[in-house]
Amino acid sequence: MLETGVIKQRTLKTSINCSGVGLHSGTKVSMTLNPAPVDGGITFKRTDIAGLGAVIPAKWDHVVDTRMCTTLGNDDGVTIGTVEHLMAALAGCGIDNVLIDVNGEEVPIMDGSSQPFVFLFECAGVVEQDAPKKIIRVLKTVSVNDGEARLCPGSHLSLDFEIDFDNDLVSRQSLSIGVVNGSFAKELARARTFGFLDDVEALRAAGLAKGGSLDNAVVVSGDKILNDGGLRYDDEFVRHKALDCIGDLSLAGAPLLAHVESYCAGHAMNHQLLDALLDDPVRSSPFDIGHDANAAGVPDAPGLVEVGIGPGRRR
Image 1: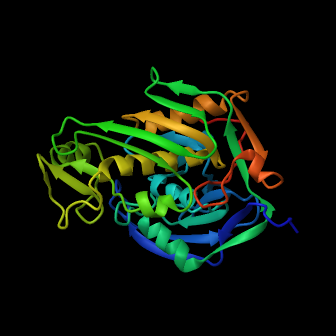
Image 2: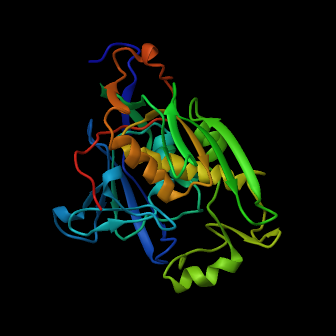
């Protein structure tokens, strides 16, 4: 048994199922979230595919595509796409170990935010496990794209995020937030993905956004929001981009002790940050926070996720 005060790994108390459509494929998909053992991490399993080739670890070195969403794959060519909203919810709620069964090529988009997944966790229950949580501490600043995205040392995961779109309604928005003390569920989880009506035809011609609708995305047309009820936050656009970033960075495999500075970053740049960080072992140090959490500067609160850094990387 671990001593009192140790920050422990967490998993779901029981399995829980949901279904929906894939944002880009447009096909119906069913997904079951299952408890997983200590150090199991987050793993996807394609139940529509037989054999060991159906298993895809949710790790940075399994990212195979970052166009419009984050897609993971394995050596057998099996993929699972649009993982970022679910990964953000797992990270934001401090859940370390889950086996995710999916019977299609995409995680269901639900309402375009992380909130439905947070609700599923609440329904299933979350339990502590008899093992200390692991983290990755950023020791030196790493930047990509001429400094437009940076990971800096920090006492917990925090973000300074800015977006700038050539649209009067979205325009330039900024957000500063620390992912501690339940802030993810309160401040970010309900922020939905968004798009522009003028782009829909081109996206669908490219085989994307086939499942997109006003039920699962904020749609902007000129200076108007087409969704009934409008926005959930005045700055919902930048909040969703921050949510995406948290989901993408959780693919490090463990919570990051880092401060993120980002200007107009998307999935590709988020992944470039992890590449730059984890390809250089001097910049990051995985360590166990269970023995001296206070000295490590880690708050005992939801918002950080578990990891294991694999030796190889996929391309």
